[in-house]
Image 1: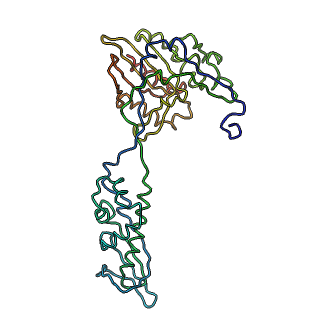
Image 2 (image 1 turned 135 degrees about the vertical axis):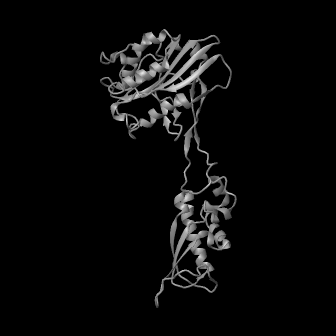
Image 3 (image 1 turned 90 degrees about the vertical axis):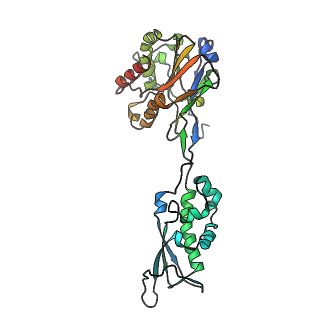
Length: 368
């Protein structure tokens, strides 16, 4: 691994270890957390081909030959001049003989009806694809030849060339993805566990350095704190700044909630979430669980939190936008009935230099 660059030259092994006290809690043994899934976008509403194909103009050059002539272009002007004349004609795909279109269409695997139907579920027939203005019917061919009249072979070659361009477009349609609005419950005991990471030369206050051993303004001895589920934090300076900030909020939160659990998401695959619009994968730095009793059982808040360095605030804005949509659009689903009422949400980015007021206000609003 070292030779390939996949492992640092001087890696230091760091282990995030769950506290035994946390593993004994009812929440760890029976509780759940919620994440969504990445799924392919449905094309059930795709009722037409791309506009740029509908209005495409495709130049075709052919040499006239043969004996069977087609008078498709009566009344159109041809550019001609003595010997070596070139004739230019304009015709829409839908105006070519259907048998010629079908023959040309059969030359392309990507234009088989079964393939087209997978991209355009409402398409009724090959004829509709070739003649409807919603699909390829209005594609314009500019045919240039050295003969005044065109044969069936000429028209077949012209149609084949045009349909070849359309086949390229259809073949280039890629699967698009989205994140589900439904967030599914997962037993936390199956997700949160000890995890080892390898850090190249940890130093200063950054990755790989214990939060108990950093500068005073960031330092927290997490080993004895019941609200932090691991024994220590080895994250980035910005992540440590958040944990330090949060440690100051705990006394107030404990007046409102019986249980508080801050979970560091150290690239835990099961805690990944996916943007509603694009399906882009995102692993927020922290998961905050707040639990309090009610008349019927428990109320549980699950809050996604991302700390962000100054240089990434703009670049990763899509992540913040997604986090802020979770509370309004995300739906926690349970596969079994229990006495816990669940809510999920996300907060604006935590950034110690520029975003503290926004973050603090948003958190206050969530935990009122």
